[in-house]
Image (cartoon, rainbow, N blue to C red):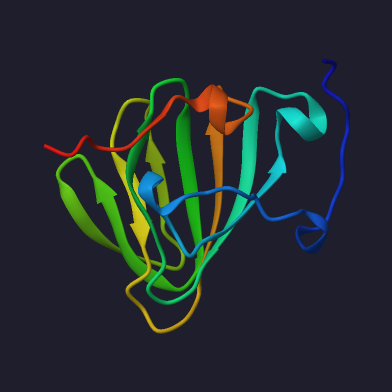
Length: 133
């Protein structure tokens, strides 16, 4: 597939369907704004809205790095060491293979702009949640 120029608006990007709680996706509104399906790239630019109480549980990717910008709201980010507070204006970079996620513990929506470097789809990212031990 050839990479092509592309332009869209957040409200025109469909929500990702089929995200399951058992895979760590709790009440999230996820959009893949730029990805392999739309432009043929091996990167993703995404937009996520987490209402109060929503979270993307701890997970990791073996085939891509991930970055996120907290546009609005607050909560906690998951790291290899545990959790840390996070709020609007934070920029977080997680290299491939490291644990990460976001839990909206605030009372307003948390809005995240994020991306994957090295994978153009969820399937390509090598998504993994912690095993139940």
